[in-house]
Image (cartoon, rainbow, N blue to C red; front, top):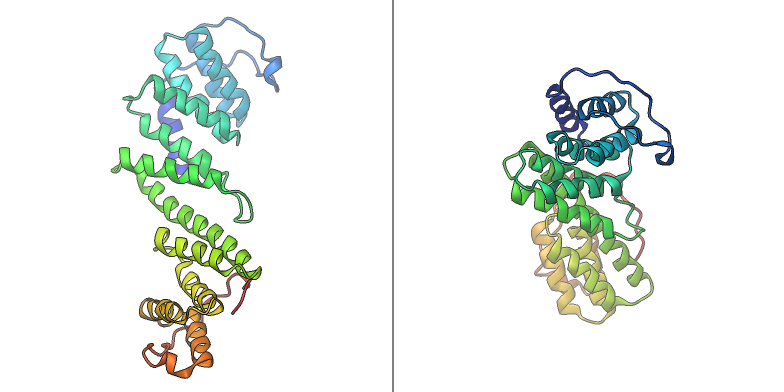
Amino acid sequence: MMRTDSTRFLRRALLVLAAGLALASCAKDKKELTYVARDVETLYNLGADTLAKGQYRQAAMLFDEVERQHPYSVWARRAQLMSAFSYYQANRYQEAILAAQRFLSLHPGNRDAPYAYYLIALSYYEQISDVGRDQKVTEQALQSLNELTRRYPNTSYATDARLKIDLTRDHLAGKEMEIGRWYQSRHEFLAATLRFRSVIERYETTTHVPEALHRMVECYLELGMREEAKRSAAVLGHNYPGSKWYERSYALMNRLKPVATAQLPAPTTAPAEPAGQPDKAGG
């Protein structure tokens, strides 16, 4: 997560404020935040001071109160985005997403719209779970990151988003591999090949492609589809001749029928690869 941009934005937002005093402390729970009428500047400054103290959830509720008490003021617009930022800092991602989306729905052309999109994307991104669990939020993160780079390609937020897109795609490819290996371990080889092919076609730039090709070689051989296995091995050898996965595919084809490797390039010598995840099926 890039806190640098978030901090820079916060500082910029605070600099536009006039100096104000914190008149009261915030309640720990929303139910305890009783309605007290305050002028808009005092209320906003109270939220800013609370945020600066690291009391993020309380600050978010105070910024919400700015909009509730003074909905038509310029401070209300600032408070909407500051509320989103405060909820994000409190790891209350759904509230952060809703607040940022509300800001965008009301002020789509605002100069801080890129930051609102960035907060939404970050809020999804930081909820990504391991590949053993459902990846719906990962898909949402990818969609949000792509939308940010499409709308605001020349911003610093888009620069960070592109890095996160690569990591997110790799994560989704890892999930496909997890499912494919599971099918393979149950000898459901056709279903497994569909998952491995999905990795190759949808996530072709990720680190999982060499293994996906090797697993396809294994599955095709189990299905008796030797020509398809040979083609997958040839693609693997052409693109990743020094990978451990091609070495395994080449050895597998050679053990099966030495003549099958006659048209395959011999594996090249490559530096030892770092240890990765243990194999879960085959090879």
